[in-house]
Image (cartoon, rainbow, N blue to C red; front, side):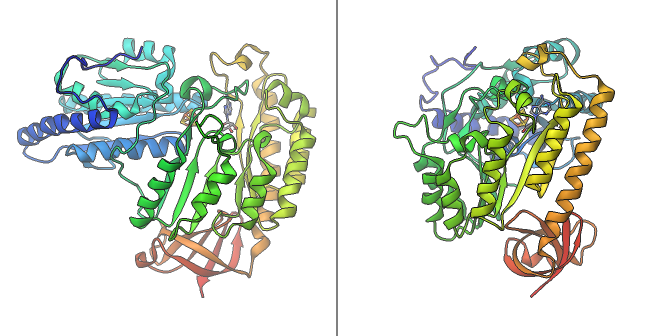
Length: 477
Ligand code: 5AD
Ligand code: SF4
């Protein structure tokens, strides 16, 4: 359904996609100006993000357009334009969106010119669109993951067309560069290096909602990072569903490790992070590059999902328990100060208490610094949805056991550096105590220490005085 909202026969509309969207930015800006005159104030907007870092980055693109066309960004959802950038990886993400939409409906009743928009992963599901069409008629605009670069155009349409506008594409091979972006943080930024995913893990909806894997051109990535650094960014996070398979579909193929080597050379850039790594694609070349690098952070997020080879096989993960353990051991041997974090799913169809024990065994052996533990959520259309599900009470017992093991090993791991001095990038003034600032170590652990807002964005040396479970209290040295 790659329909164009505005006909290409209108000869004023540029053909180049970036130029096209900048053209629509101007059109939308004229409408927003008119609205401002009517209201006697600058119209406000609010972008709410659900889900992962990819979505957070997409939201910065939405914010970039909204600010460019004249909205004032606020945190409050009682705004003149509200957009939810949704996630659908687990069902509870969907439920939260429906709940919050109910609240928006209340705001809109009191403020009829309010516009409500929905985008992101959840919108790529046909059943969601059906539900919105029947029960959520007050929504003005709905689009998906593939045409987010058309936001300026879609926004213009909400001013020029009546009724609910729905524009969902089934896929795209387009990567549109150089559209406005409004960063949330001045000193750090995410950067997409690839879009989509080709792995088809049997529980996961992502390949269906984010489409096939496409890598961005290294030239565009490097140019974007250089511009960010010139603008004060010191830490970047390279984003992709499976960064280890970066570059395979480029005209001139390039590995992720080679890309990292190029990024390392950028002067002024101080820290490089990336996520997510699929264990099956993590190369020795990457371990080598990380080991030699002065800028790549000592943190690797390496989703395990399950420690049972039998379950891993049904999950279509394409590694065994032993292969995963060997990989983790290799990484720890080469880079001893690295923090390894993971994602674990409990309650995948057919999982037995013995399978859960295998997962616990891996947690004990790898000693994760942190692990996100999820209860399996059935996603319509994925192969696992058709498999026999584990009863809820059994899942709960396994989940609690896994969580407890994770917390115990993480506490021990994080505490390894007590008494040492490490570099921390200061991120913000502490939320609970304004006399403290919060910094992030290279290994992703947080440390709170006395300081003020003038330190934000700076990398400083901090003594890690006291470990409190998952974070440190310290002082600057
Ligand atoms: N149920 C539960 N957790 C899931 N994840 C992905 N799909 C599901 C699902 N259907 C988890 C995986 C993944 C993380 C982003 O979300 O652990 O790594
Ligand atoms: Fe991110 Fe996946 Fe959620 Fe989409 S569905 S927002 S890709 S976690």
